[in-house]
Image (cartoon, rainbow, N blue to C red; front, side):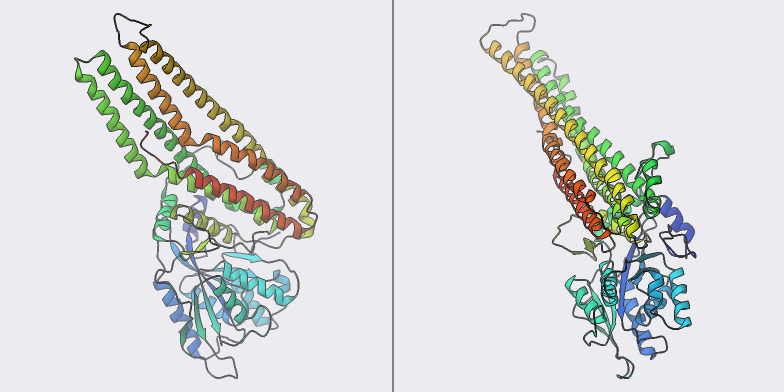
Amino acid sequence: MALDTPARDWRRPEPAEGESAARDAWQQGRVSLHLRIGITGHRSIGTDDDTTVVDAVREALDQIEQRCRRGTTATPVDLTVVSSLAEGADRLVAWQAMLRGASLEVVLPLPRDDYLTDFTSEESKAEFHTLLGQAAAVTELAASGTREEAYERGGRAVVDRSDVVLALWDGRPARGRGGTAEIVSYARQQRVPILRIATGRRGHGPPRPLSIDDHALPDALGPLSDDGFHWLDRFNSTLLRSRSKANEPVLLPPELVKAAPPRAQQFVDYAQPYFHRAERIAGSSQRLFLRFTRLLYLLAATAVVVVATQIIFFGHNPGLVWVEVVALVAVVITLVLGRWKRWHDRWLAARYLAERIRSGVFLAATGAGDGLRPVVASGRQLDAVELDSNREWAERAFHEIYWRASRSPVTELEVPALRKLLMDAWIDDQIGYHKKASYRLAKRQRQLTWLAVALFGVSAFVALLHSMQLLEWHSAPDVWGYLSVVIPAIGAALSGYGAQREYARLAERSRLMVSRLKEARELVEDSKQLSSLQRATRSTELLMRSETADWYDVVRLHDFEVPA
């Protein structure tokens, strides 16, 4: 099953121009940004219309391009046209945008062979094939319902992927479902900025000059906020140490990939480099964060031990004070370094992205994500979701990856294989992970708790005996007082570290997640038709995304702090 036209390798995430650099970026898992211009407009508009329309399109593209951040070497920001390649406005804008170096992403409202019957002339069909062959990605939506309903789904899919919509519209109500007026109305509902070119249909007077809709373009039009772009650029520019293939993180085990339908196999091949980069950065950042966090608590306890040792045993030798000073200075340096390097934030966002990519495999395999809505676009918040700039870039990066993968419709014949894939490679895998995580985290919490309790118990016992003067050590009469200070300091460090890691809370979350995933598995297992399987997939993905977001919100509150 081909996922793209024969003229292009479907896995390439960039257009034909600069293919070598684009291929290198894809192989290294670097995510490019594309300011997406969705197109909607009348089919009656053509290149033989008054040049006013063409000039207005160029002016609109100029306005958009002027507000588009050009990015960096590691993270370029390019223009991309999102189009259904219908006759008229869609093709006119596509050609004009591609002339200035924009790439093309195609969303077909129907399977291509069926959609092709809408174009009566051979010249129109040839132009369609030419444009399709130059597309960086092609998504074919499955046929469902009437043809007008299909056009409506296609138009909405274009809006959902767009940062701004360019509408070539005469301002009149739509004549049926999926018309330009209806798509413009949907864009307004979704708060997507609209740039309108007021036109006149043939027989209704000449086109009028460019006009800005009431949803005018924001001053800073771009796929990400400045902070979000900084974080994505840092992700892309991180150098990864070479590893053997045997140690590379994989989206799916090879045996499961071989048993998966071709659509899923191809998406795995395409998304693997991005997943590899996200996993590697998440793993290295997590290790550095945890090592320096442990060092913080160790240094804090060391400072207490040193000062107690100096006061009680070496009162006439103040030289040990310098050891305490060194320990405290090391605490400050560790805090400053950890905050500066932002290992904690890099770990969380990269892990979040890796989990989104993993779920994306199954959304793409079943076609359940073809109507996927972005959480953030052009700096606006959607669906009442509040995101910090760190998670903002991870969400956008996932959508960039997902949108750039070509996909064709899923058939009912694939349902049994897809159902097995979802259960074996996705849900059962996550159930196993959360079972192990719950056991491991609960065990660590118990160990730290009992060790801290034991230390405080010993300290209390020593303090009691010391206060009752039942113990004497003539060579070091204050040793028991020393222990009553040092032991609680060590116990406090252990308790503080356990609280910082949230072992108990995360263990309970994983335990509850297991029961929810079992319910999701039953839902998938009972899905015998494609539509029900897609609903089950979306429901499961939402469950996992909510769990990942909750984990993110819990852990992000525990960055490098002064151990007290």
